[in-house]
Image (cartoon, rainbow, N blue to C red; front, side):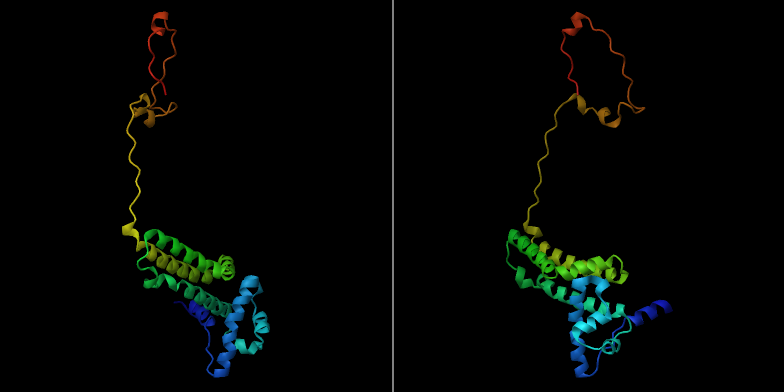
Length: 214
C-alpha cells in the first residue's frame, strides 16, 4: 500500500467510542444516516443533516470520524449489515431440507425478491451512488457476489432432481437446398458459380418436370 492509499484509508477509519454514554449516542447515528441516504442519496447526506436528525452536536460525530465520506461508509456498512441479515435464510439448511424441486426454486426466488423489496429504498440509493463512488461500487460488488453465491447454492440442492428437458432432433429432409454449397457461398461471393443466361426452352422440354427450386 502506498503512502497516499494509507493516508486515504486512515481518513476513512472510525474511532469507536469508549464511554457507555458516547456509545449510546453514536448508536443513533447509523440508523439516522440510513434514513438520510434513503430519502436524498449522497447529495443530501451531510454531517449537519445527520446531526440535526439524530439531535447530536457535530463535535460528537467529528470525534468518531474525520470526513463526510468516512461517516457515509460507516452508514453504508450499517445498511448493508441489515440487508445481510435478511439473506441469512439462504444459509439456513433446515429451511430448504426436504423441499420438492419446484417448491424449492419458487420459494428461493420469493426469498430473494423479499430481500430486495424490504430494502428497496436503501439499495436503490446506493446503486445510484456507486456509479460515482468507487469504494461503494467495490463493496457493493463483494456483497452482491456473496448473495449470488448463497442463492445459487440453494438452487443447486435440487440440481440432481431436475431432469434436463431436451428436444429430440428433427429428421433430416432431402432437399435441393441441403447441398453444402448453398451455405458456403453466397450468390455474390467469388466462390459462387456463375449463372448461365436463361435459354429459351423448346415446347418438348417445357413439358418435362422441372426440378424443385429453393
